[in-house]
Length: 464
Ligand SMILES: Cc1ncc(COP(=O)(O)O)c(C=O)c1O
Picture 1 (cartoon, rainbow, N blue to C red):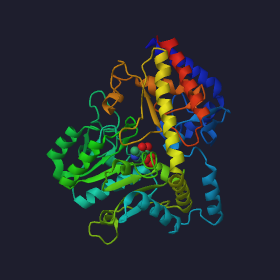
Picture 2: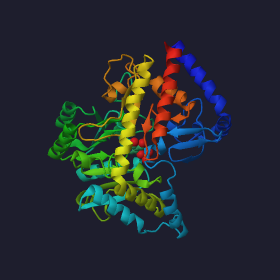
Picture 3: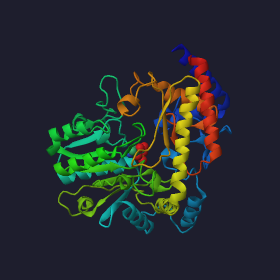
Picture 4: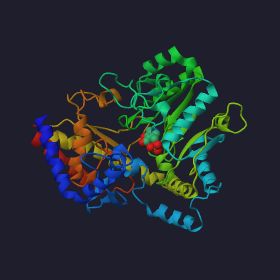
């Protein structure tokens, strides 16, 4: 612990030297904003840098430092920051009065057509909203409305946004594992009605469904677990989820808010060949704007149509399907569909290079580091990477239960210390890694590996 404290102290000092203006801005922000900002994941300690601008792979702070960024707008910016393509498109759209009107307008139809074509099949329908949190919340409500059932099933480590039905089993807690509630302010009843199963564990899924099947409205799962550890679902697991949910009349929801358009110009379900009932999308589909959607067959989506006796109120949203946002999403998806062979394999190669090189540079300093984010037999390659520091070198990094347990992984090293060690070497990561974008060039990846090597040297110096 002494070594960790000294290393933290050293890094905080180095970070402060470089970020005096950010520190002053943060002090001002703290006076009027909770914890000095709007999202706790952006508010690292001792204080975040404040962005002055961002372009392509990099972000610039108010002190003039530049960081190669793998956070990329919560993984939404698959073309990098501020792509000219989208800027140009929305500028012309704004010129024609696309600032908020509150009327239905055309671009949303094209974006919906793109989603239906690439994901939903002929008979699908789309409803847009403005955040992933709302998309998963509405999908769950729709499932509850359609089935008349009161239980919701999710996986431990699955983050679907801060919707009341899903604020359980996100953070691993020493006593409760993934059974804990994530927030105050939730009705006990809602927390009790959310069940948690182990990701990629077919036996556990089967047990829970067999015990509660006729009460479960939906099973929501990410085909590629995001915050839970960047782990792909196995094909057998998703196939089992499909057959069990079909057998028991449970609505299967794939949360593809990270994975949609991240691995291929569609949702990841198309590679798995497993069709859920509902798909929640967000992040990339908005081209850098607040767009999210639920896609599903008409016969289910009609559950939110007016006039139905048990109508689910999937609406609200002053800014839903905002013209400018729809246009941005359309440009983004159009680009990805058209350029998929150039975009995806290159990002996946960079992801692979980073994952293996990061493990190597830490091993060279005698530190066990493991990267998740790899694909599998279904996912051909992956631009995601997350770094973990197992306390015992041989601990397997293949389950959220291991990756989030501080007794098995050094979480402070991953979340806090590695973050600062990379920031002072010009790289920004979250959870030890992030997402490669199409804007990251070979030289950015090489500079990133060099920064990890510097971090590894520091770790050895202070922690041996
Ligand atoms: C898999 C997943 N689902 C849902 C959400 C919530 O999306 P939003 O932050 O847009 O509300 C997130 C956000 O990170 C996510 O990663």
